[in-house]
Image 1 (tube, rainbow, N blue to C red):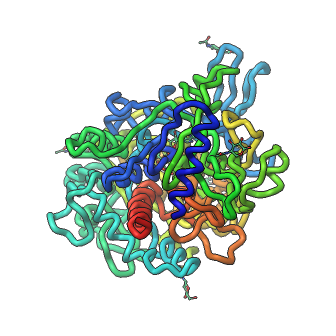
Image 2 (cartoon, rainbow, N blue to C red):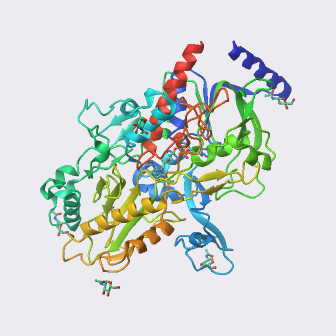
Image 3 (spheres, helix red, strand yellow):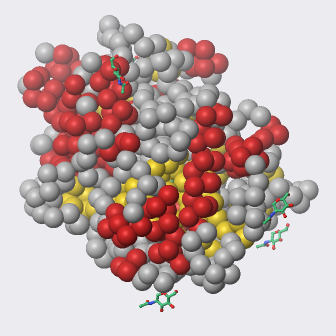
Length: 614
Ligand SMILES: Cc1cc2nc3c(=O)[nH]c(=O)nc-3n(C[C@H](O)[C@H](O)[C@H](O)COP(=O)(O)OP(=O)(O)OC[C@H]3O[C@@H](n4cnc5c(N)ncnc54)[C@H](O)[C@@H]3O)c2cc1C
Ligand SMILES: *[C@@H]1O[C@H](CO)[C@@H](O)[C@H](O)[C@H]1NC(C)=O
Ligand SMILES: *[C@@H]1O[C@H](CO)[C@@H](O)[C@H](O)[C@H]1NC(C)=O
Ligand SMILES: *[C@@H]1O[C@H](CO)[C@@H](O)[C@H](O)[C@H]1NC(C)=O
Ligand SMILES: *[C@@H]1O[C@H](CO)[C@@H](O)[C@H](O)[C@H]1NC(C)=O
Ligand SMILES: *[C@@H]1O[C@H](CO)[C@@H](O)[C@H](O)[C@H]1NC(C)=O
């Protein structure tokens, strides 16, 4: 009945506009890990679906198609959206960040703390990929599962038992095309759209390789027998083990790619859906910046009926190719059933706020009429803290090529300061990754050796995305507010991680030792500095690229909850959010696989509801 009412409303809008307005069952905004697979699933169920993407399609470009080129993709101007973010409100701390980026008058960048006078400060780069497939097109494709608690907390908040960690595993099985586990393994799927591989660990057979010696020492430090290290290093990181969140051990790194190193991503799934002989009703519209969600007039509850979109290339000001003053053609597109916003952790709250959904005061400040006051939109942001211990040995410790991750030791472990669960995901090898700036990373030569750390379970959750204007082409103000809450605890956990990893390096052997550590404890003293000094370094220099939780799922009585248990924007009809902004807490060490999983769950929820209505 009320579907019919909407149709009438849409028709009125159509007549008023005196031009033909496109209309679909579902309109999905953003083609990343949240929105891309969801649009495919809806179309495959027979519903006409429009997928709107601000960027264009680079799926066949080798920079994006080959996962090993991810660093090049991360800096590539063809998809890059540069967000210049803050890590805190502390000006002095902000100005100590070594990779601060400045724009020079001739258009090039200066990176560092001593810029020429004429340089303009841009800040800390946080790259995002605006292209068909979203950030899954420039990421490293590393897959891990959340800690069980990260799912179970949603059960606690909403009372919906379909969110238990055990039940969520079924979405992994649904989407996965596992290329490494024995066929039929209960923990995995084998005919989904997402190819997953584990790493090539053949190098570990070489006992005299310094990297192998470091790996064995690390196994020992994590409480295992050195002789078990090679076997442990092959452990399936996505496996289903009792007490997995308390086990400190080595694992094989899993990435979303095929055996030839071709990236597996929403881009592939979208292409497969478009080219399927079954002619699924999926339409993809590129170079389309959604500027706001449209609502029906005169309904009791705000009801989404479509979107307003500006078409053209590089319209968003985060795009380094954007030319000042460029505007696109603006038009309306109607959704008969629902609008689903999947613009990612920075853009989804911006789109909601521009549509009148958000904190009342902020909307008033920019003259945006309030459709639904939801104070949590753009708040509660969290991100895995990342840091690294990196040193230069006397000779190479191993060799590194990114495809199949040879030369990498992967581990997840619990530091003694962590009350219950393991809290550090690390990967060690002869590479360098020290965060983000245009043109990252810095190559320190063949003798470089690093253990990169992702801190799991960050406790600050105080980050925000605030509007800077009502102009949808403007970039919001983003502050991650690192370490604001329980910062000392998180810093101590990271320092303990660094101390443990550094110990493993001492097994590298006399050809490599001593390492000249670059940070966090510089010099050849093998950790000859205080924890306090390391804490200070990490507080100032930490970096991140897994932001989540700006439109969090939460309970009925939670003022800051933006979504309910089924991704519905609270107090609004026919509008959902499905992307990394929906997680109430950071989902483990890497968000991309959990985002694919919630995308599959959302498709199931939406289709079940559609079936009930018809
Ligand atoms: C360099 C880098 C490496 C990473 N490596 C890993 C990794 O190895 N493993 C991992 O788990 N995670 C990794 N991540 C993070 C991971 O890729 C993201 O968490 C994930 O892609 C989030 O998915 P999403 O759907 O929420 O948003 P996104 O991937 O950001 O997708 C959002 C999409 O929406 C589009 N969009 C935004 N606004 C609009 C608008 N107004 N109109 C139309 N379209 C719009 C964007 O163009 C984009 O395509 C990495 C991230 C970066 C930056
Ligand atoms: C709602 O009413 C306003 C003012 O009359 C009009 O501009 C707008 O187009 C209407 N919206 C829809 C969706 O019909
Ligand atoms: C840009 O200017 C900087 C110093 O201001 C200079 O070092 C650099 O070489 C210049 N680059 C180009 C491409 O002109
Ligand atoms: C969920 O609530 C139960 C009961 O209050 C509690 O024991 C448990 O720790 C909570 N779990 C999470 C993940 O919050
Ligand atoms: C094993 O590693 C050592 C030390 O780097 C190297 O000299 C040797 O060639 C390697 N052996 C094989 C079989 O690759
Ligand atoms: C360790 O630090 C102390 C005090 O700064 C210094 O005297 C000593 O030489 C250092 N040792 C090494 C091995 O660097």
